[in-house]
Amino acid sequence: MTIQMESRFIYLMSCKIKFLVLFISLLAIIPSIRAQQIDLIANTDGRKSISLDGQWRTIVDPYEAGYYDYRYQPSANGYFKDAKPKTKSDLIEYDFDTSESLTVPGDWNTQRERLLLYEGTIWYKKSFDYQRTDHTRIFVYFGAANYIADVYLNGEKIGRHEGGFTPFNFEITKLVRDKSNSLIVKVDNHRRRDAVPTLITDWWNYGGLTRQVKLVETPATFVQDYFIQLRKGSRNQIKGWVRLNGGRLNQKVTVRIPEAGISKSFTAEANGYVEIGFNADLTLWSPNNPRLYDVLIEAETDRVQDKIGFRSIETRGTEILLNGQPIFLRGVCLHEEAPFRGGRAYSREDALTLLNWAKELGANFVRLAHYPHNEFMVREADRLGIMVWSEIPVYWTILWENPATLDNARTQLSEMITRDKNRAAVIVWSMANETPLGDARLSFLKKLIEHARSMDTSRLISAAMERHYIDTEEKTQMIDDPLGEYLDVLGCNEYVGWYDGLPEKTDRMEWKTKYQKPLIMSEFGAEAPYGNHGDSLTRWTEEYQENFYQHQVNMLKRISFLRGTSPWILMDFRSPRRPLPGIQDFYNRKGLISDRGEKKKAFYVMQKYYQELRESFEK
Ligand code: GCU
Image 1 (spheres, protein in one colour):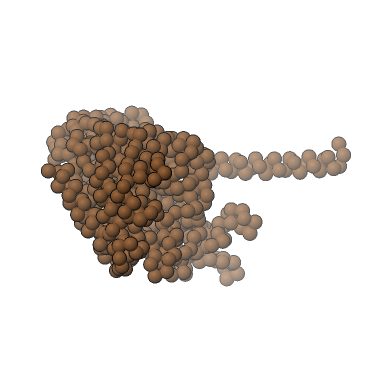
Image 2 (cartoon, rainbow, N blue to C red):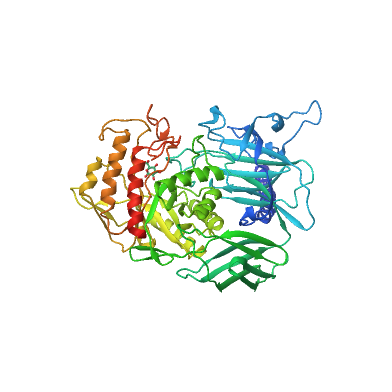
């Protein structure tokens, strides 16, 4: 063997050894993260918890200097180490504790002028002490973080979450200490082509820890999750399950509904899972009577209380039936934009303001676009009797053929359903919005629908589709997207009179579909900043918007299979795609109400239509 061959052999051997070491260390890390990252804990409001909301120290890191070294390799000594100089000669080039703070929950864009357009990484640090109780476990729970969150405790990586609108939690029992815990989160809201949503959206890419953060304490074996709703199509049979997590799993589990005199016991299997089923004579939840019951889920070592309503929702031909009765969904779309102050909405007050405006409009239904909104929104809708369409951000043109994109969308779908499956108000799971026809897209969405049905058979599945003309005169619209085959309810977005012609174009419009299914007109709208006036054909005026809605309403009344409407949109919202000076100024002005709560003329056109519908449908 020549010298050259010998040195080449040694070089290859060293590469192999390096790779082997790397692979083993990776193998070592993965189980520990998975061990710490458990499935979502349901109903954290019903558990012992400590809020970590408030001021968090932050480091804005556009070049991810806190994560990568100068060779763009993940650094072992990143900002997550929260290092401090030990001697006067020590070199540490960051310091959370003298850095600026941001409020959590809250997007960073509306907290500092210079961060309005910022897309990138910001590091968040929260220190906390923790007095642990024996035989308990500790989890850190995030309501949401946009878009990717890498989470560290006391310098250790505890997990990563992708997706800006769904909750996640990690177990920290083994890592938490009594004094000065350092919880650090790297939040990155970079838009990516393979992400969900992808690069282009008509909403602002608000970044940060946008919802509540809390510590949740549970017994060693606890009630991790449960599904307690009426069986599909039934009005008196409860069907569901309870799942325990911990060391002692095959415990006795009891479900109690004290106000209905119900107490049913079951025994969990060795894996902690137990199916539950029993008859119950309950007052059914409806918009006119949003009855919620106190429901107690008790195991031998844990007890969780929740407020749950019971109703059945199904379709029959082109009818949507709530508790067996045909209904019309008088709805409106809304973004999770905070009224008055702007930015990502996150509080109960934000939810109440928006939902009460919807009620003023005469709505009994809201389409939460285009991503799962915060939990306050769905719980207040439950309490107020407003039915909900909840959607994952499979929006416009994502990478249909990318398996990682499908996994990501499926995970967001799982998290959305897991969090809200016990909310009677949520009647529709929506898989997508305005996605282009094509085989890859159809198979992608079919997989999501299958997944949703495997998790929840009690609700309706839909998606906001597009339509097309079937005649050159453009008088007849057809809804025949192949996706419709797999949906329970058809959703369709149309802008006839705004993006497509002038308002009177609707006057000759006829609507057809190849499906014998109910239709929700999931979007229609026109733009006008509040207070901008002119004649009814002058774009951007309240009169044009009003005219648009008058023509729309007349057209909608002629669609025989229409069973719901959700105009675009309740309130003006920030969008990076809307630069028109003096009119839009980076706001989409299709709101029926301005972002300052001012009602536009069009608001009253819809209010009057909903009054009529209410009278005709509920007489
Ligand atoms: C689209 C889309 C919305 C968008 C709206 C608009 O249909 O679904 O996200 O904001 O139309 O153009 O205003």
